[in-house]
Image 1 (cartoon, rainbow, N blue to C red):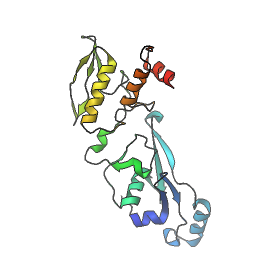
Image 2: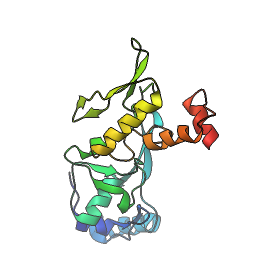
Image 3: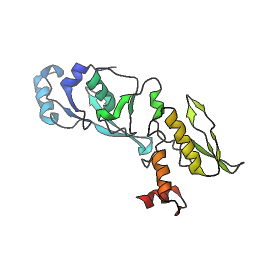
Length: 213
């Protein structure tokens, strides 16, 4: 089911600078009666639309808006509002699915959205694309490209493996926020975290983050 740009603009106003939708004063034609129309407008017109939906145990948040009993992803509505088009996927450039500013949205169709994916919940190294090879006692840089793992090399230091993965992502057009973890730090920022504390090496990545903050 799709919604037209013209109807969407009758229902909602979108601020591209903030990413926030507000309810318009809707016409009688949207309702079964003038009484229902007046009641709805008195209650909602001028207010911010939508609410935050939690998924994956609260790890993933996004804004959804219900229009005529149909729930829509706010980022998809923003894309339709601004362009009149509805791509298969809409990507949030900074990885925050609640940030629906127009400058933060892009067409993620054709697999582009896979180039801006968060860190998997089962990651154990703290870096996307970095895995521990027990038999070698070293860290492997093993990112994925087009659905296939790419072996870059093995490293004694986890940070060196993370740098190799980040370089691979940069060279292959991945987003700055690809591999971002639940703390909101992408690979480049996490690398920077370690570098800042060189000489006072913390025992864990969490300690490093806390000390830099």
